[in-house]
Image 1 (tube, rainbow, N blue to C red):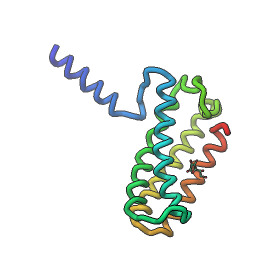
Image 2: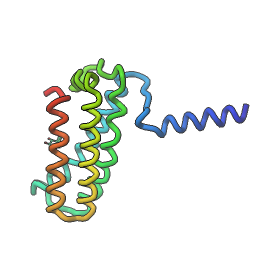
Image 3: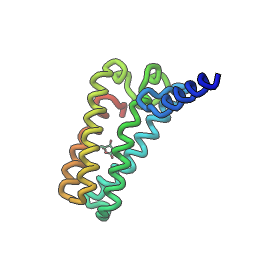
Image 4: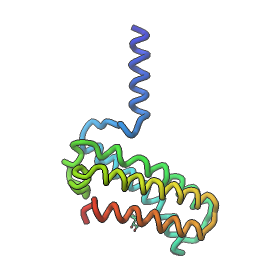
Length: 150
Ligand code: ASC
């Protein structure tokens, strides 16, 4: 019995620690999860983009920290796009589920660009940050154009 309980706890812990296979109590929770992850990512990316555009004073430490958070967050939204999560009201288009492979490609592309931005921001070089912000913003936009309602 003890062994069974330990095994059950281990399986539970693994499940909780594996965002890519996250399960949600209801579809609405998955929608809230992916929107929350996108929001935290955008707040951090937007800060770095603001610095790149000269709208916010450049602070290398803040840029590095913000880009690192944005990179981490970029991995999270996708668990919230599982089967059935097209049902609650949101800006997510049905095309996501109809064309999941293309959507997933877009997600990987954005993660890759966000990772490059984190490297650039850590280096503190504003010129490389500008290049990476532009590439990352392009990845956000092209996916939104196809898969997010206006
Ligand atoms: C953002 C944000 C996006 C992208 C995009 C870049 O800050 O919320 O979707 O940048 O606007 O073109």
